[in-house]
Image 1 (cartoon, rainbow, N blue to C red):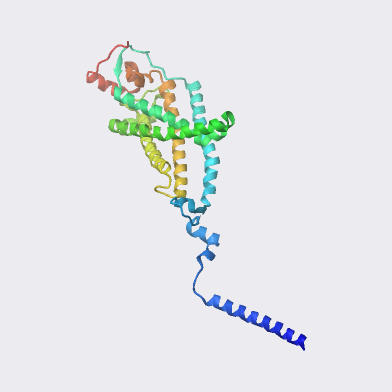
Image 2: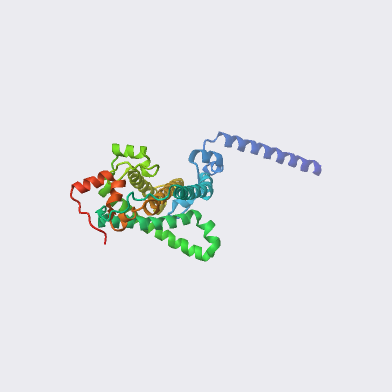
Amino acid sequence: MIFSLARARLIFSVFALVVFSAVASAAAQTTNAVDPNAQAVKERDLLQQHYLIRGLGTIPDTSSYVIEQPFGRLWRVVHEVWLHWIGGIVIFGVIALLLAFYFIRGPLRIEGGRSGKMIPRFNGLERALHWIIAVSFAILTLTGLNITFGRELLLPLIGPEAFSRWSIMAKYAHDYSSVPFVLGIVSLLILWAKENLPTGVDIRWFKEGGGMVGNRHPPAWKFNGGQKVLFWVSVLGTIGLAASGLFLLFPFYWTNIMGMQIAQVVHSLIAIAFVGTIIAHIYIGALGMEGGWDAMASGDVDLNWAKQHHSLWAEEELKRGSDAVSPP
């Protein structure tokens, strides 16, 4: 009898548990409320809608709430792999081409030699702005390349402590030297914009190879077609670098993590193209053309150099009665 009562209680308990589970399941299915925490575990849906997964936090920096952002994987590959290859190919490729051109073509000599008479080409303000830009650009280049190549090239040579100190110093040098660089470019834009507007003479200059290819020296005004291209590339490149650099200089002030990553890639690509262009500019001014260095060293150029490379400008200066002075 006792055994039968115990069995009956067991059967009743199991039956009650089954009925309670069924009722609870039906109630859960009929309710309209959605638990946000239950939905948060659906990672695929969150990434498709927002491209990142955010958590909750209490500190003011809301960017720290981001838990997962798949675009960061692509950015890491671009920053750690692609930029190394692109930067190396562009910089060393330009240097290799210029060396080959130098040994094949050689520097452009002044036909007939120096005349002994000089024509003023750039005044003191123009030269000062040029050298401010040149020095600040050199600092920006060295410190910027450290971001891309420093860990692979410098860290094994100087060790982690020295590399850490150098990188901190380079970061501040990069930030502060950007100010005189941008202001210098803006100043030259105001001074030289009118003289760098394209004309029909520039088309002929390019068709005849600008005097670098062959033995012909096409006419040109104060700035030839190549110099005008360099001028506008520098202006547009500076605008791109300054715009993307502001996002990096003030992180998360105007954009989110994805915007920061895009700004960093854009900034790096423009900088690499800029460095390659300026390397070619330095070659022409310092090694590739006899007498070209004088323009930014003393501000005066030889009369024969002016007639050879900027004949229209030289004729105009002589007609205006520009003083031709003997070199000291």
